[in-house]
Length: 226
Image (cartoon, rainbow, N blue to C red; front, side):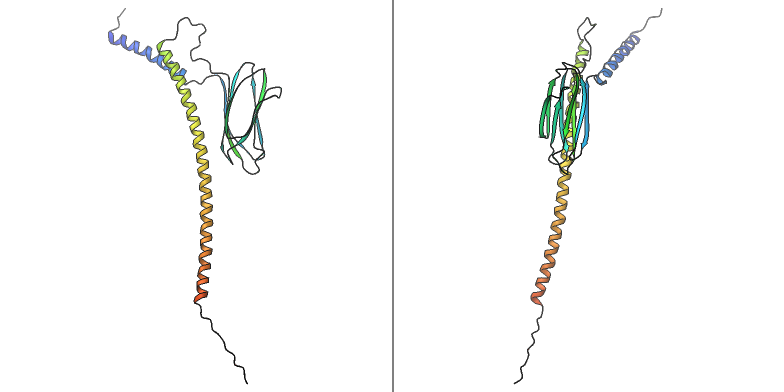
């Protein structure tokens, strides 16, 4: 049987490590199976929008929402359990986060209301997380502890999730800032047009007023015969 040289053995070992690294990177990029819903939707004026989620008992859940555009950037939020008991209720909130543990199996309902607004619609973002993400490397049927490379992959995976969360929040803040800037720009444009019209009217009035001061007024005299 022919023997492999040192270069060939090194190439074979490098190939095996490349395959392992590729597999670990794919594990990092695959999203977790924990239930999470991120939705951005339009909420018209005098409207109410509800969402439903089936949750098992003992599951830890987190509801986070933020109003991106519209009016005073506020909305009503209400969360109910399967029996209709109110778990969370806030009025005219711009953003908030609420964490709870499901006390029973069933369908939980959370609603966003803009019924207090008469003419402005809102854009609302919410993130509803149900349960936690499964571990990157499951511990069942595992005899040895995590290797140094697997521990590093877990750390990188957690850091990437934090980066995704920060990016989401920064995108929301950027969208909210853009909306406020566009609203301010519209108001400034209307105010500039109004000022221009007022200046035009005042200028024309001053011209006619000055013209009346310098115009020749002919006086007529009437002689009364004796």
